[in-house]
Image (tube, rainbow, N blue to C red; front, side):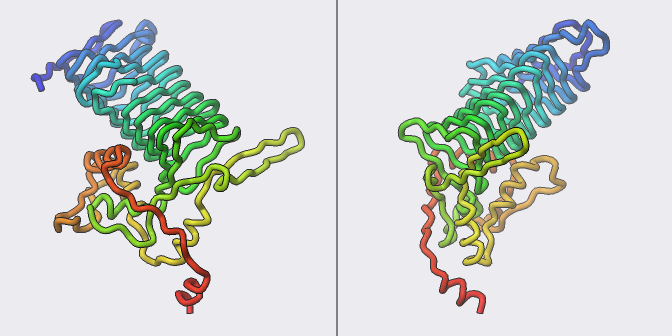
Length: 324
């Protein structure tokens, strides 16, 4: 990385290249409310950013404060390097990144009217009217007030009136929700990872016998609920494996370490210390650093890790023997 030069902010339009901003980029007078910020490459902003439009032409870029734009946060399609947002990111209109050549990471929540992301890792949740995600990891939830499009993603859960999924989509939590019937493209699979032994996968050790990924049958695993008041009636569709989760909880007293892994991913730098899941397959500590967790989930998304399928067989007699 080239040596960064400190820059002081007072212009109506700001362009950063090989710069470090020690403070914030916030308007101090009315004329600066419409200020555009362009990051050419190789810059660090240590405080929050407010801009009419924030354009990122290429990395490396690290923004340590929160970000808000009035029109758009846009990352060029040919952007390279590492782009990191340490705190929440919001826009009154759009947040768009279709680049596949950079390592894009959001350490907190995203909130905008329209969100389009490709090949991104989001440690928090996404809230928007319209959301389009492709090859993305979202540890939290994806919540849309209108349309949601997921293609080859791992998300905690989703909730939207209209949902379309394609390729392989996996859930980290037992349930997800929509209002209209789920739209699935041909050769699409919906998986649930809430009972997969993610801790063992992270450590490279043997997965628990009762663990495994569940391929969801949208028709069989759909639960309809009607909400009625004096004026309206609304039907909510839930796609859930809660029954299987309850069965496994009864059979196994040893809990998976998934909650530690997901909590470490979601909290990131907010944790006061770095934890580990114990010894890995080589006897070394499986440290829950953010970078290792990010790499783990992208390996999971790419199919580099072999998650065993869930063996759904159990009997009531096993419950009786266990609780005598």
